[in-house]
Amino acid sequence: MKNFKYFVLLFAMMLIIPFAVRAEGEEEGENTEDNKAIVYFFRGEGCPHCQEAEEWFDSIKEEYGSKFKIVDYETWYNSDNAELMKKVAEVRGESETATGVPYIIIGDKSWVGFAESSMADEIKAQIDSVYDQPVEERYDVISLVDSGATPTVEEKSNGKDVVALLAILVVVGGVCFGIYKARQSTN
Picture 1 (cartoon, rainbow, N blue to C red):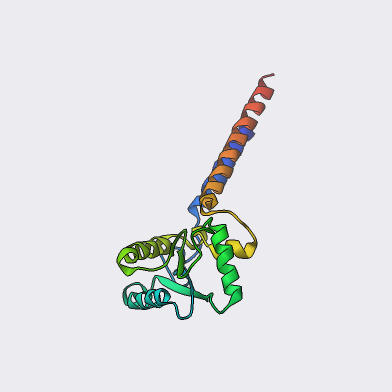
Picture 2 (tube, rainbow, N blue to C red):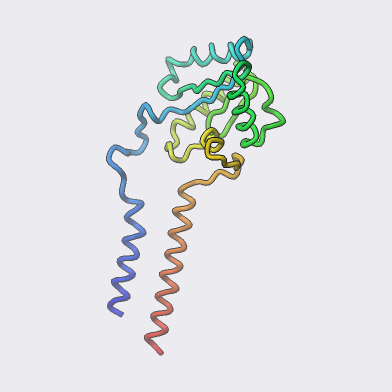
């Protein structure tokens, strides 16, 4: 029985330590240059709506420039970028709707076309939202396409869910082991 108490104590410590330890420089809410929200911007050279979107993004750089960076893909004259846009739309389940440019993706939200009056506030809010998320928890469609994965936005896995599930499995296993040992010692 004495060994069982040590086992339970060791088990509890193993569950607590991963949640209590943080890497150096990983303070809550700390953001560096690498933490900027990525704006994937599929556009066509000469497209007036794309030009309007580019000008609008330039106009918000003073206020939001520290929170986002644009990754630009010209699709009208670059067949590789056009193919990438098609794959991105497939992964996101938007093959039917994302057929034109500009096609803007920030985190798990996207916009086709651009109209400052109806999209500006929504895009700014999404930039803020993604910027505030830990980098490892962000939805990044380009990474999914590069890895060959095809989950849609709704199927995105959250790392915290996996850790919680593992912790629950370990606790249940420990309890079952404890019950087994207790029954064994009484027989």
